[in-house]
Length: 451
Image (cartoon, rainbow, N blue to C red; front, top):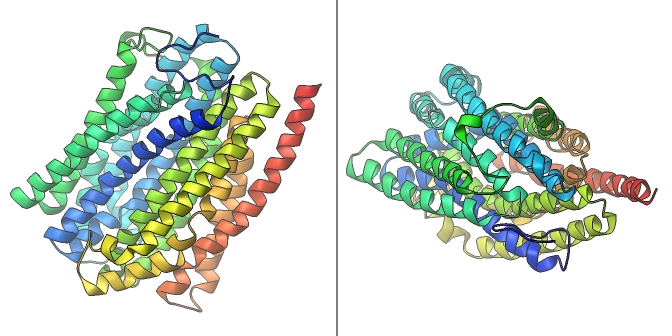
């Protein structure tokens, strides 16, 4: 088999090195994307006030709620193209690529309009404090003007990753991250634009990463070449994308909804608590980026080998991905715990804000590796074209149980510590269910391929 430019041969040879080389740039890309918000938060935390910091931070769960459906669809795009590669159907890839980019553009435009309309109502519903809500609405509306670019990056990167190219998405976000930090400082420190400045910086940097990803696809000379004049939606490939991506996206929406409910509970403790919890949550996100990179790697490698009907290699992908992902995350979490007071001071020196941040460090971040025990397994299930199973398990384990906890347990023990404990409890429940389902599905796959 000839391996083409910017591709990794996922179907032959040793897997460990290939999985690591694919996952690390993907992890770095995801971390850079998360650092867009972290940079926003750090700049306003250092150079403005807790209210501005809370305005930026309180939007994270809202943004997640509104964009998660379409982020899930990008997972479907990755699986659809990877399956084509594994099955040797290269002639169909061009139609898939143009369908995916068309869906990205339509998704971005839809989210732009939706964000403008519901920004204030949803933040009001979440109980955003009176001294925060106006700034939060302003930030959210400016942020959503960049949605078409964000969708182009997410879907375009999914296309590139499907053939083993995690390097160029990393390049896009590295450059965009540098632009974001520079513009944050220029707009906030130089021009005193506060929340408006960090929002504009994020939008412009997202436009750069989305635009550069499109350029990469336009310069490809193989089946992945993008010609903007040929953008159209092919019904067959849209169906493939929806089959895998829609359950993943709906799972993400429900998951984000549970986080909105938790954020509403955080809001009840005031601006200092919002700012502290949000600052600490950035380290949760960085850990999640690493774990999710291995989950996405397992999705892609499993998808290609599932398309090639190689059950043994699918098993090996899951085993190596799990060991590497959890192992590296434990090292990362150890670093965070050792330097937690230093790390949190990157965002704020306000002692009241730091007090609340430590609850998240001590009771959630310390055991955050538990997320990997179900996210990586969910990736393997999606790679085997079983997207509904992890979606349903996640909806129950990390969503329904959280809602029940916040509704019935938290009101009895109304403290920040009691609220944060919802995370490890639901991670353990979800991990047990997800891995049990994986072994059942894997056995069924092995029997199917053997027959």
